[in-house]
Length: 245
Image (tube, rainbow, N blue to C red):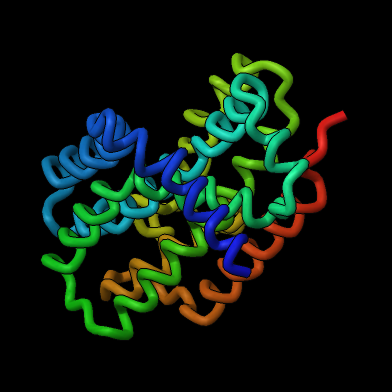
């Protein structure tokens, strides 16, 4: 167990902390778009609707910083060949992915802290609400990281992945009801919104912040987020190509 924890910590340092210490402005990339959306929603819709954008910004930063695991993992496998070393070592796939996923958290850490502070300033966040927000954030990180690693294992060239991160970020963080309440969507089309795992996470945060969500059920949202996360992690572990042919 100690050796596995050491491997996780080493990967997180190598792929997350160290690059950001060398180039701190890398983290700005993950907070610019959510802040821009927050600014325009505040400007045109007012402070009330901007609270939804603050909650959505937290999800968007996590999605954006987690999905880049696909390019990071592919770079390590295709360019540096370090994955082959871990495959040949006693380090299991789960520890390897966990280390890389934790490393990506540091890319979005300034944005996560910023939007968490904004949320605390604009909503009545107690211990229970804080735990719910932390749960939603963790489930989002786990599910998107698993998806990113699975995609990376099928890439044969780094250029194959350039389009996926922005596209998946849009599909998971900007199109679903993350920056806005689900009540904005016509009722007939609302079931489509639940195809995105971030819908559940966003609604957990919105309800924790006391925002009007049109009667959505917190227990159902938590169950949906948990099931989606375990499903994506399970599929990723089953389909990911750990030992390349």
